[in-house]
Image 1 (cartoon, one colour):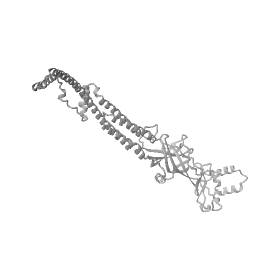
Image 2 (tube, rainbow, N blue to C red):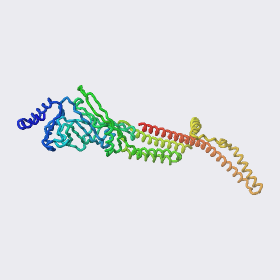
Image 3 (spheres, rainbow, N blue to C red):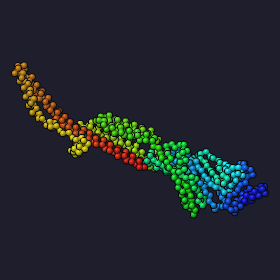
Image 4 (tube, rainbow, N blue to C red):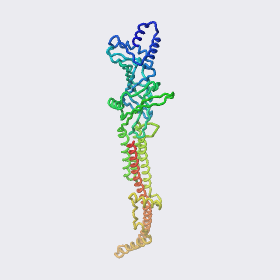
Length: 479
């Protein structure tokens, strides 16, 4: 075969057109036995080797196999050099990889001793390159272009180049910021089927993972924790099979930033709001404090809004957590407003209904350790004004007889006026005292109702916070 090519090149350099030479060369290859073509070099140097490879370069548009029914085996591998980021809104993963492909070019073979080299770097455009693409690719590759490939004396071609991969990825951010994402990189031929082009991995998955962790320069908030591979064969629609090698890249988010900047401050503010129940509810200091706390938390959420993921698929659990914290603060403020109104305006309310007295004062009061105070027997006795008038008259009479006995008062008219004035003052005092006694009892009952409800809501507030926080922690841990 080599002798035929040499004779063809020596005898027909000018009389035969290049297209006819190529046609004759391909026809000879099609009917030749399945073996490589040995290139002969005139001198053991690179220029002579490059000159000997010129006929091969003219065949770069066809698959490099001696028999068209023989499939070309392409080995694929890559090294994950960096995780550039993950866009939750666009559902894409940005990575930087070094991709390697190796296949056999059956048109090439030379003697390293005769040609002076066992490998040579040549432009990629001079060789046939398999059309292996990444299915999840979303944008054009912006990595630097590498124009050269390695060609070895046994016909193997090694093609390596960097790729800035912006690939689609179905993200699940429900457990943000403790989420683990599993994105795929699917390598397959865009045109060739399995009967023509067969793919396998260049090296083991463990070696790819270890090498990626060793050379990785940037991961940002993501950490590479796993890498698996799966070979998928699917029907192509034309009674042929379609082969695909799918790598699953598992990355985990580093949650320290979000825990320090979002979760811990929110827990601190909820704790402060919880301890604000110790302030006296009958003053406005407690309500003003809670309003200031809610305002500060709202500003905090607006400032930290850029740290939260934005996607329309699912609502992250951390958004539920932050919304729950704000809702608890709002509910505690509303409870404070109601209790303060009940305590400060109790003097103007009608007496406590019987059902409310039994439900709140008797049942709930004992439940929250605030039992009703026993009534004072002296407060329940209504004194008779006539009896008081007789007592006053006897007192005034006794006071008036004493000076007569001593001889110090001689004016009876002044005594009569003093007696009349004492009766009026005593009647007024008894009436005011009775009204104050009735109003004070009603006011105290409403105040007691307010304190019982305040303590009950405080206990429910603690219970709800504890259950909610424990539930979210369990979900995060299990996920």
